[in-house]
Image (cartoon, rainbow, N blue to C red; front, side, top):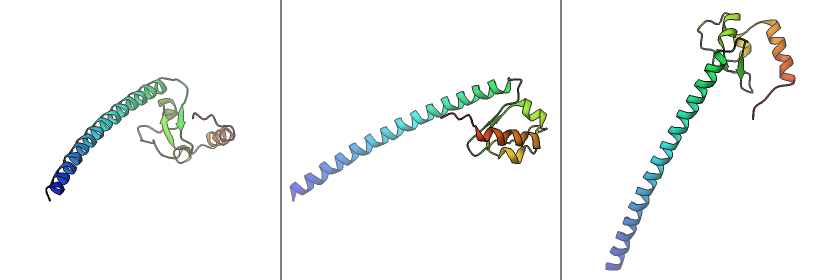
Length: 114
């Protein structure tokens, strides 16, 4: 009986050690992810600042043609004012025949960043 009690106590100690290790690893990983998210947000802000200061019209879209970034020049040209268009389909935001034709031609030969 004493052997069983000792084995159970040893197993409980081992479980506590594993639990402590797991908590440390989760905390470390969470901290690492938070740092990466901060870096990503900082990089995004830099990119937005660069695009905002380019005089040409710039629209950055994902593969589904949803708007990721759009600069002031495009906002001014298409009277988008301060509407938040991020995540919306470009064709739903800008309904201009010439622009949509240009977009359709560009879709046949897209520039993609992997």
